[in-house]
Amino acid sequence: MIVTTTNDVAGHTIVQYLGIVRGIVVRSPNIAQGFMGGLQTIVGGNITQYVTVCESARQDAFNIMVQHALQIGADAIIAMRYDATEFNQNVTEVLAYGTAVKLS
Image 1 (cartoon, rainbow, N blue to C red):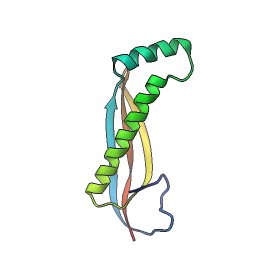
Image 2: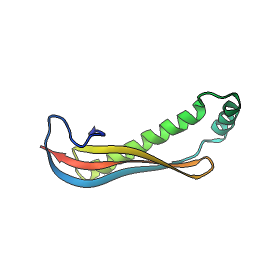
Image 3: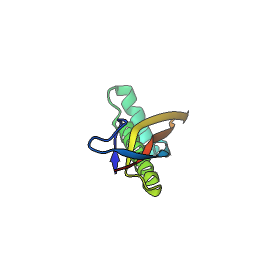
């Protein structure tokens, strides 16, 4: 599956737009990540425990989006983006979305 942030796919022609595909994940750090992340906020710098949670959420949202595209017969996803919304303290939705297309 080709996934790009651009509106086209180099070397290919888009022959059909299949619609928006998305992957949504809602995450919070586990107890250990929350505790260690809290300690790191006191010291400052990059909070690696939270980075791990964020990277995992983004990857899972991406994978769900790709599965959605495969289910509708897409060859590629164009204009792919991420978005995030905090619902509660330490509870965040991560959304990966784009336009599923067929290529020639």
